[in-house]
Length: 184
Image 1 (tube, rainbow, N blue to C red):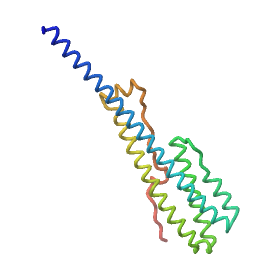
Image 2: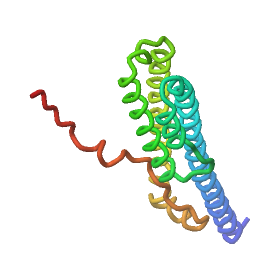
Image 3: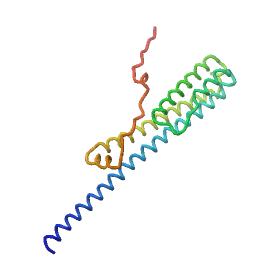
Image 4: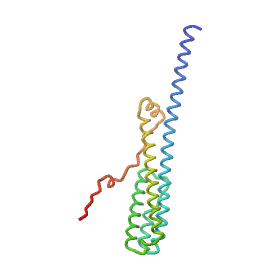
C-alpha cells in the first residue's frame, strides 16, 4: 500500500466522519423539533382539560344565572390547530372566563356553598398546575432547540435543512408587573 492508498483511506475516513456528524446533527435538530411539537400538544391537552372544567362550571352557573353563563360559554370556546400566539390569547380568554365565574359565584352565595362549586375550584387549581407545567416543558424544549440551531457548527446544518427558531410561550404583559398591595 503506497502513499496514495493511505491518503485515500484518510480522505475516506474524514468524509465518512463528516457524513456521520451531518446525519447525527440533523437528526438531533429534528428530534428537538419533535419534542417542541410534543410539548405544544401538551399545552393543547392542558387547555382542553381546562376548557372541559370551565364547561362543567358553566353548567353549575346555568342553574343560577343564564346571561352570565352564555357570556362564559362564548368566552371559553376553543379552536384546534392554534399557533402559540393564538394559544396565549385563548388562555387569556379562559382566564377572563374563570374570573367572571368567580365573580358570578360571589353574587350567588348558594353557589359558593355548593359542594360541586368547591370541587370545581379544586379542579381549576389542578388544571392551572398542569397548564403551567406544560408551558414550562414547552419553553424548555424550545430553548434547547433554538440554542441547538444557532450554535456553530450545528447552525450550518440547521440552515441547510431550513430549521428556524420557534416561539416561546410568554406570560401576559400584566402578569409581568409586580402586584401592588393596598390594605387601606
